[in-house]
Length: 422
Image: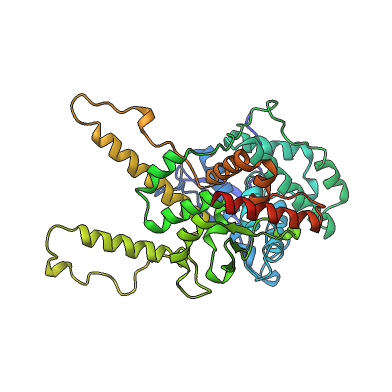
């Protein structure tokens, strides 16, 4: 038996193609919308596809109407309306002291999107544990990992907790949702996460030969210090204390700052040698710049060019290009640069194997790895050389309720680890 549709409005057939008459969030009146799938040119003729497209359109409309003022929109007490208001609250709540977003709002959007897709027009006060389990099953069917599903279900609960505080729904709604427990390892059909393993230094070095010098320096510095990718990408000269034999880097922002934790990354002799050239800039400029990496790449191409530059090839750079390199890397662009280098390294191996009698061995290919594995590599080396406590100190791991005295001891251990290992 087909599940009852919770899409608001009316989906109707118009000459064999499905349309949707509905008042979307942010609109004042009902409008007919053709239900065109992504990548398509015409409205779909499949009723199931039409319903799926309608859910996606409604979810996009919710996110689009999020920034509109309350005077511009109408409150109808539905799940979609509640999600829109909660996301607007989150956008102003989850910010750093300097006013920039922590990224939590973006994660919340992913978390509540399945809820909006399935039950956009359902009154929020009628949302029950059984429906939350259906949303969770929808995430399982989407092949999300178990830990990701649990986090997103908790985000939905957090949204209803906020709704109770704002007296948007009765407390009994939240009480019922809290009864839905998280998925347990090995006791659900959800996909399990793969454990993050350290990456062998041999493969890191092989990848670095195909990286731009800027990114190669980032990789080596992260492997020595064990800092997070986000901390590495936002490094500026003004954040690095260069007094003493061990430099101290204090990130402008970090993962656990909302818990009141301090983060200090010691940089030993080898790390200092890598970082030194990138400190010669404005004190408030980022040390690792994609624009510099692009300039170095272009200069290398010109140097390796074998044919003369033709007149038609001179001054072809656009004065105002639509896309240009940013002022710093972020965790995603940093990871993509490494992924491109791995692809380039493996392409060379496969090309060499095209010779007669040669075959590609899987052991010759660079395995896929990501920057976070460098943090695990650093932890493994430090633990082997100096013990678990020194590794925990250098990586900045702390527990709630830690004392100031214990924190000072951690920093001393971290400095000693950096001095010994470089």
